[in-house]
Image (cartoon, rainbow, N blue to C red):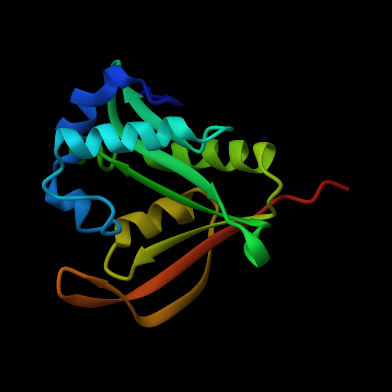
Length: 169
C-alpha cells in the first residue's frame, strides 16, 4: 500500500482524531496518548509535532489522510547519542506493511538528521505486532525488563529493541 511521511498540517486535525480515537491503539502506547482521543488532544499533538526543529514527528499519510504518526526523539545528557522511535497507525491499516517501511524511513532520517548512533523502541511484552514491526525493520532485541510498565491497572514487562547507525569504512 502506498503511503508517505510528511510533517503534520493543521488541516490533519479531523483525520488525526478520527483514527487516533481507538482503544486498541491507546492500550499499546504511553499514557500521553489519551483514550478517548478528543479534538483538544489532536490540537495539542499537532502543536507539539510542529514545535520541533528539525522535525521529530511525522504524519503517516494514506489517500491524503493522516492515519498515523511516527517520530524519532533524540535524548539528552548522557543519553545524547540515542533517540527513541515511536509510532502508531489506524487499526484498519494494521498488517499492510506500512509501519515497517515507515520505521525504516524514520531510521534513515534520524541517523542523517541527528547526531545519534542508536535508535531504540520500548514496547509492552504483550505487543507482539509492534515487536514484529521492529524486527522487520532491522532492530535487534536488547533486553526485557520485568514489571517496569504500568498501564490501566496492569503491570507489564518492557521489551527494548534497537538499531545502531551503520559504520561506513
